[in-house]
Image (cartoon, rainbow, N blue to C red; front, side, top):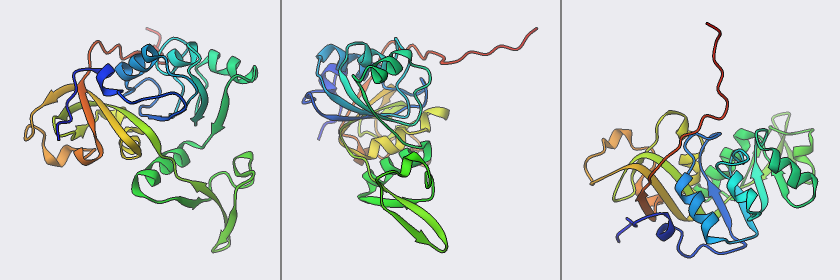
Amino acid sequence: MGKVVKNAAEAIEGLESNMTLLLGGFGLCGIPENSIAAIKELGVKNLTCVSNNAGVDDFGLGLLLQSRQIIKMVSSYVGENALFEKQYLDGDLDIEFAPQGTLSERLRAGGAGIPAFYTPTGVGTTVAEGKEEREFDGRKYVLEKAIKGDFAFVKAWKGDTKGNLIYKKTARNFNPMVATAGKITVAEVEHLVEPGELNPDEIHTPGIYVQRIFQGTNYEKRIEQLTLSEG
């Protein structure tokens, strides 16, 4: 089965309104820039997007917020996006917050076929409201449900035509978990190589999880917060 597609537009074939999309990356690092641009161009609406963050006002998922294509976000951090804040306060955007580690584990569980798990994170806070709690060894835990998506989008530094992926540094946050939890996983890579060119010991996502892959272009790799020391 050939997995290589020409571009992002071909990679998102079958994506429709009202779907749940999982998107990898951490801050603005390792986000599927080409795929997000193609989704915006497609114009689908009422999307539920699961991502560690919502980008910034004019980059990353912020582009889909600009075009009002997202109706719900499942995130752990949204502090850099003023548009996100405005849409939420105006009642135009539903938000489900999850602690960062919990979000990561919910995605991992979805990919592993685990429907739910107990965690002590969030017990006694608003995170636990409406959720089942149990006590193990004298400590309280809250039940968290796994997350799965109709499409999952990841961005890797290098991949081969079989879908095996290698991420670079911070891009390994969330991308490996996201890749496992989509019915259709789309990988965009900076470098697309032939099978055998990747060191098997360095592969982070095995190709069995990836259905479509393409070589991306024009990566901006924007810095979210730039801090320089004096002198």
